[in-house]
Amino acid sequence: MKAYLSFIKLRLGVGLQYRFAAIAGIATQFFFGAMYVMMYDAYYRSGVSTGMEWQQLVSYVWIQQAFFYLTYFNLMDPDIYDSIVTGQVSYEFIRPINVYWLWYAKLFAKKIAGAALRFLPVILIASLLPVHYSLKGPASPESFLLFVITLTLGVLLSLGIGMLIYSLMFYTTSSKGIFSVYTVIAEFFAGGVIPIPFMPEILQKICYLLPFRLSVDLPYRLYAGNISIEEGIQSALVQLIWIFIVIAAGRIILKNASKKLVVQGG
Figure 1 (cartoon, rainbow, N blue to C red):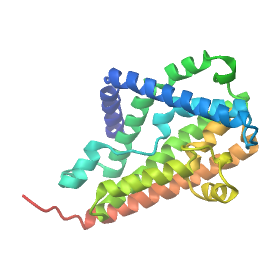
Figure 2 (figure 1 turned 120 degrees about the horizontal axis):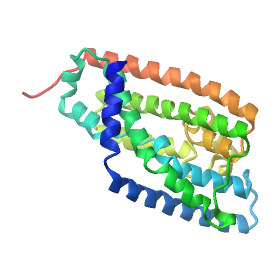
Figure 3 (figure 1 turned 180 degrees about the vertical axis):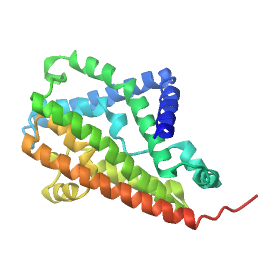
């Protein structure tokens, strides 16, 4: 455990140094947040009924942008990717440390470092906007507590899914392809492209069957008050089950891959 915490601390230190990238990230998240809010404003003014009240939607959009880096499914880490493609991963397998948890710790630190420099400025700016477009507080203290819990579990789940994809990369010839397909599918069915209540009923059912929405849709709609406390508690238990499943699957696949690993070249 001490070794993994050291890797997390090291990665956090490196990630927090890129302040210019953080400023660019803040500007990007605010731009996209403002664009989505204005787009949905025109949509709501047309009189179309949706499964979310206007203020719930505004909160959903801004909280999603504030914590975007935490729940974004594209976990392409250059160091891990290059180690698999070039065969350097063979050196990691002979170290007295579990490669799965080593990579998991690296990705965790990358997410925390990226979000730490962005979420507060986005929240502050969004809170100071005109009332119709501004971010409001959580629906209730209970909603906020569940938001924190489910957001934390959602991060662990997204990392587990990402590690599952990395494990599958050992069995593919085009590593970037599997990540590209995975990212598009995950973002859509997580509610990252459009909120799930806006989707047709058949797509909503598919979203609820897949684990992706538990990392994005669930915590943000809990904050906005669009999901009840009872459903939030039940969904948190489902998150725990999915975390166990994807981590167990990823570890098994990576362990089997390490036994059959062949590095070409000299």
